[in-house]
Image (cartoon, rainbow, N blue to C red):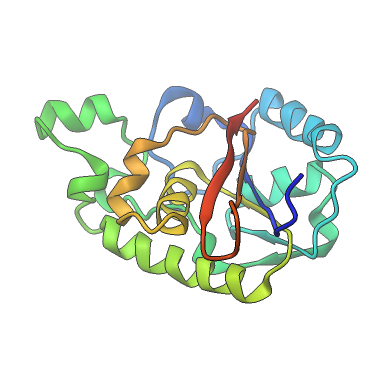
Length: 192
């Protein structure tokens, strides 16, 4: 446990699209039975921790995960925690995109009619600013690509730095500080 505030990041539970690798930005795909069971187990994994606030993405999958984990009643829904807008690539797998657009990389190229890494980074910057101003332990429920960009921006990396991180469904990651509030670090990542 750190003397400084820790930010817990939780990726939502499994959906049919997350299981099959389909890009799920703004579509509201429900959790699978496996995803719901894993979300319920988050309550045990987060037991004993105290948070000044709980924030959730507006997506149904993040809100449901938050609720099943036992934090839904006090959660603040924040639009800036929404997953990457995949535009024309919504519901499509990376493999299928690469068949049409060889060499494509989400974090470098973004999505036609959707967001770029810089767009997502601007939203992540607003969240980082709110976290730093709160200076308190906060629990966040959101989606993989947004949380990866959030981690990159927390560390001062460009939004494209989110490509360096990977997140499994219902994983817990922890952002925090090293020696003082001027040294943001990742204290834990992709804990299953």
